Image (tube, rainbow over all chains, first blue to last red; front, side):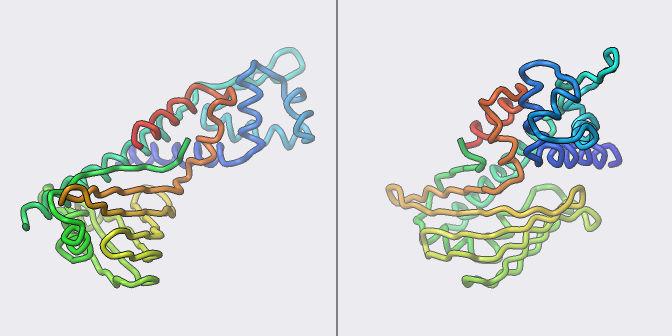
Length: 111
Length: 146
């Protein structure tokens, strides 16, 4: 039970991390290759601290990893756990399928 | 591209029968039921536009789910549209829309369920813009279910 709660907290945090356009923009940028905090901040018109906050949220759910390179901090895409989100949708689909099967059988038996 | 789940079943009965069954207590309990021993399902339905339909279901009294829906459209025997809030013991509640359609097909009924408005739109919209492969997987999962 604790494990499943933990799993869902990760899912909630992943959805939250992806719910912000700036953070999605950061992921898009990093999909083209690594960038430093400063390089990321510039196109968004954000301060370094503002950008660090967004990167931190992405880092918490492994969407981004960072590494100190010389005096800068370099960001790369992380081993994102989006299987969680995918699995959640699949679970919903299976629930609905099962309900339709049961309801169809109920109506047909009742005739 | 779509953020909806869409499922279909052909049921061997005319739409009037299927629609009627779906709006009875027994039909709703069948829809939300399970063969698991001890499964709980309760339904309270005020079948009118603006009326509330509440279904509580789950494997045990300390692990219950709830769908609280308001009827937005009732077009007997063709269509029902609901605005639903789902409460689960394991995560925050969330809202989505559900549309049920009942189409006549050679004396049988093609019943379609479309759920939309999941909190995945943001994820899906990123597909094709060079964001991680995971977005493509999410997109495929959604497409596979439509």
